[in-house]
Length: 362
Image 1 (cartoon, rainbow, N blue to C red):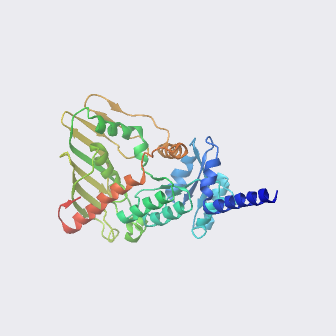
Image 2 (spheres, rainbow, N blue to C red; image 1 turned 180 degrees about the vertical axis):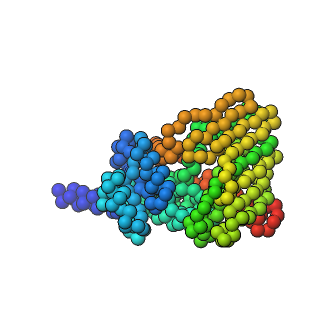
Image 3 (tube, rainbow, N blue to C red; image 1 turned 45 degrees about the vertical axis):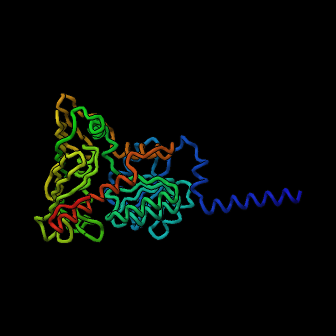
């Protein structure tokens, strides 16, 4: 009997130690597969407040369970509106305690880009799955560190490229794979809007501002997804028409991309010019999208008469449900961290080309 008692204590002690070291592994292994995954939003700015939180009310496979904020006055508002329990409310200082919270499976990082790497890595170290808003991070080295932390902790990392979950965008991505009109010859990709703010993170270099990482990513994505290739060279120019606001970062960028097949892309992005379109010219046809990267209503047409106009209730809800299903089923993500890294490589090349006024090979 004494030997059996000691063996029982040894095993339960090992279990307790495992729980302390890797609580999320044990929690996830016992979670019912049909249960919605709990999401905690880190950062309660416009995108979390007006877009993601409402979208989480429409999701089938995940739900809003927690918040992380540095603004205590926001807490009662969110708790009253979404029924968030006290134990699921965190500050940036006690955020790491989320490791022991079984209500929260996923951390969604919705902070200025300069903070993405830190909170992605902290979330991964806490054993939580990670969703991170775009741009993934200000630098390639940050992106690589984020990917490594998630791999080391055996959690998934998805980047919030909502457009790649939109069936209208997927329609021209399919054309890039199947080549119904032959090879791509030229792409024109543009993403921009007029931003009248003067003291937002988008105008501050230290916070990861500048149009390239923000709207520029949509222009890059349009060219990359249209060709199905990665660029081999970049020629870029950046400028501003409002130096009193855009003196730390660029307001507008224009850049040319060359792809291995010989396809070329002319890309434009701006905080001072409204534009949202993608034109793809193939050897034997064309695809046109306008708008191309909106929250809703993306649509287009093909030279063979095909109309691209798929209904979609909520782009962000579909994005989050797709990612939640990938986590639950342990399948590939539509937009893993490596996809965000590819874009930031192009962003860095654009900055290098603009600064040196020369062609940059990739």
